View 1 (tube, helix red, strand yellow):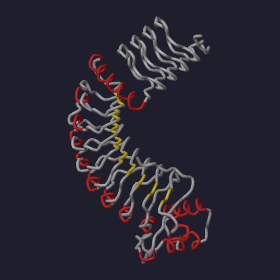
View 2 (cartoon, one colour):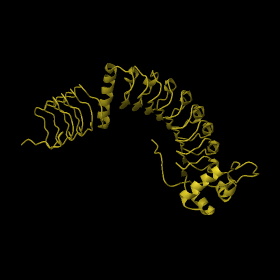
View 3 (cartoon, one colour):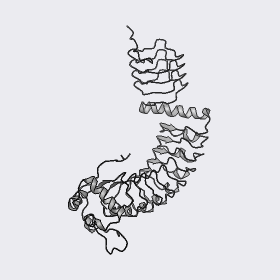
View 4 (cartoon, helix red, strand yellow):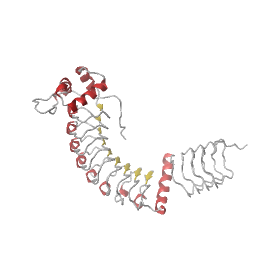
Length: 376
């Protein structure tokens, strides 16, 4: 998964022959535009106020005003970060065709035509802007990670040509139709929370998806999701899904959020238990997970993190819980007879009605903050 950058400093990348790159017009009635970043800097007085502000943000971040020095710095890196800077006009960035990573989150950008020139980009962040038209992105065919959260996007057509995309963030928009994503075979991480999506079927052939977030949409059915055998994390909180049977065959799923859906508990618990057990086996971590009433007799749970988990009524006879984190876990009416909880953390755990016959609590941190005694 690509690491998203939020750096306080600016990094811009290496390029040769930048002076040959064209640059769009900088204002009405101006006959000729600068052709390189150096020209842009030296002609700053001719820029529109919004474009000049963008340049000033760049100069301020570099703590330099001499254009030749700035130009040298500009050519020293292939990354540029200009987050949270009240930027509206990014036309001056069209000359930076060497960039491979560009971060422009939390600004006031409404128009991105200049980005169509930056075809070397592999990572682009435009989170938290005011975008509705993303058509210029259809030229950025080398993109592997794209961040477009918190905009005003409804139409994803421009993304259909971005076949190299592996990670796509589109949460908090107004998206209804996912058909444009059907051709993106390399997608592994897809974030679509807080949209207006009711139909998942366009994703049925996105077989490389590992993480899919769809909470707070309008889903009532999960058509096609059973094809996504590589899914490990699925978030469906706050939809109107009533049947989760299509999830039963997702053999790699280890995290599932299906809260706030009209799902019968009798349908939810069996699938939830299977997924939670798989998560413990593979990750040894499952905080706040539900294992209520399961038979975990003689289970190997050494060092697992089950903080806040529901283990009420669970059969844990003779289980190995050495060093386990059970802080604030609900163990009421569980059977811990013969279990080994030496060095376990039981702080604030609920043990009401719990069977503790021959349970080893040596050096365990007990619910009241005391320490368990060791058998001679």
